[in-house]
Amino acid sequence: MKSVIFIAPPAAGKGTQSSNLVDLGYTHISTGDMLREEIAKESEIGLVVKDIISKGMLVSDEIVFELINNKLSNLDKPFILDGFPRTIKQAELLDNLLNKLDINNYEVIYLDINSEDAMKRALGRLTCNKCGASFNKYYEALQPIQEGICDNCGNTLVTRTDDNEESFKVRFNTFIENTEPIIEFYKSKNKLHNVDATMDSFDITNKIKDILKWLVLKVIEK
Ligand code: AP5
Ligand code: MG
Image (tube, rainbow, N blue to C red; front, top):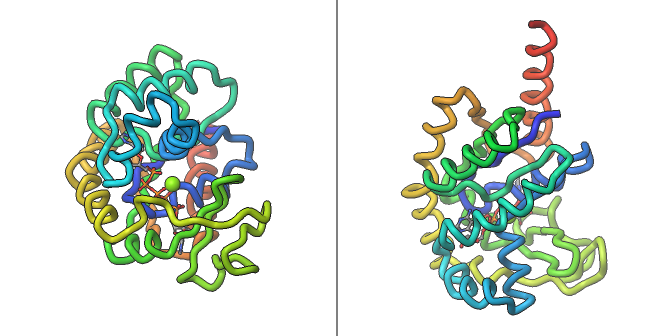
């Protein structure tokens, strides 16, 4: 099974798609989730990154790469990378690491969404800090059954500190300046697949599954 790397603007649906695919046997690796865990633990890293994340800016390449290196170096399953790489430097570091680990069986999915739709998703998002589930007050199908309560574990839902208009705009601009150039990086490696992320969540998942299946069939045909 092919590993997946998601490249996408903020709130495009990386986490949602990762949750929809994880049962196929993937390990989900989200740098955002890992950093938020460090903040919750009040670890040394957490104290350094807390304000940076609230403002919507990028954490240093060194900090996130250390987290990724530890995870990928100890994996025995295909992975989904959600939120890494986000800069050309990170893409190069990842490339070197995957070469070292002899991993080439992966594809890059670009979840394409405009700023307006993504902002609506970010401002409507409600997350569960206990089990990580995500809901959205602006989309009927994504609303929790009981207002403000997680369907999965009953915990109180919260709004992320970076889900406000000001931070969202910084995050989206940061994506355009720092992350969009990575698209060319993976295009030149023949790894990039564009998916319209404005569709319904399960239509997007099916589209991603189709891409991954089609690639497997292509290999078998050879
Ligand atoms: P991170 O947590 O990765 O945030 P992000 O990139 O801004 O992405 P989000 O988690 O906001 O959105 P998502 O794409 O996962 O969307 P979701 O599925 O939740 O990173 C946070 C911060 O950490 C960064 O800003 C940075 O500071 C730091 N960081 C992380 N990685 C880093 C790195 N590599 N380098 C440096 N710094 C790093 O969906 C969003 C909402 O929309 C939800 O409510 C969901 O229910 C809803 N939704 C999902 N799909 C649909 C759909 N199809 N239709 C309608 N609604 C939908
Ligand atoms: Mg996410």
